[in-house]
Image 1: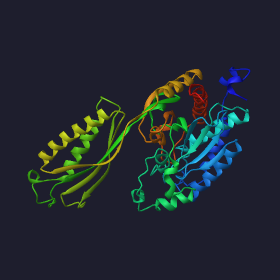
Image 2 (image 1 turned 90 degrees about the vertical axis):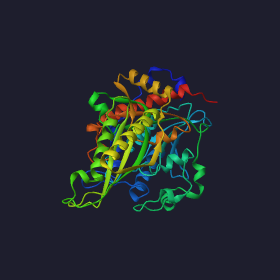
Image 3 (image 1 turned 135 degrees about the vertical axis):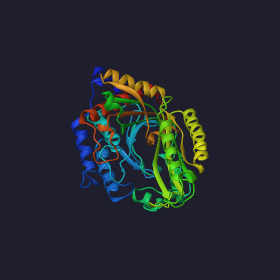
Image 4 (image 1 turned 90 degrees about the horizontal axis):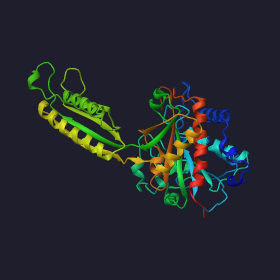
Length: 423
């Protein structure tokens, strides 16, 4: 049956996913790697990750999809369309988790995609485009799945080395990937017409506003810096206050400056010092060296540049007043990624059609969608996170909001099927 030739077009508008079934699948995957505290530990490439992927593969195939594993370990379920050679519409996210996670982050977007396909399949509906549900490999640490699909993998396996994780080559083999053939995972607009990722917000904005759906405007750019403050260690009791070069006092002023810059009302910026190390770190000695890690995020490179310039000015003044030396070293730079305007407008229109309240907001966390935007049109949908909690066992999104987000995804894909032409 072709959506364009349904005898009652209104039946398309009334299509709805099965919310109860969606929650059942969420809880079923959530039981894989369940922790005694109620959380989930399903690290990428580990046995729990493998088990979850095997379970999902059975569900995808039962919903009429063919399933392949590319050389980067991405699992791709494909629901064939009327024009199988046309670029596919895609959705998805990831199944791997942080060490102590909830059941929604990542996996919700995957299982909502599955539920969309189940809804189409049980009604015998085929779109013009094939629809793919993609499970990206290792989103939480290396993002190697989406990076390989976008052709952005660092060819040196040591780049992905970590003292607490297995090497990347055998890890990929665990889930069906192949490091030596990683370039074969690359795709482009000939393969994918558009990608839409549904995700829990992982923040408090939607809940605080009483809004059902987040219209993601873009994924913020992220810059990370290591800041080292060098002073002079000396005796805490015998060194006069006026003669000290206290690296920790200087660091405290830098941290306050970072917070003040983040609170400025000239953008969507956030700025955080999330790690600190001081030496010699004993009670009766003035700290001679402090190392801190700075994370800054915004949708605008211009604002990020302004934030950094302001901080450098403040640090120069702090160094002079405290008689310390302050050095800043770049560690990470991810570019801001705006969503595709047509996809954004389509999601907004779908929310209006479904009588769901919606509000624009940026994604302040990285997602696979940010990487995939390099090769195709991209959009994102958020649903509220209770209390803004994520990456923790208390992460929660209500069944109502889960169903609403999945329905928005369903109807967004239906609308995009009409927008992108097949040939």
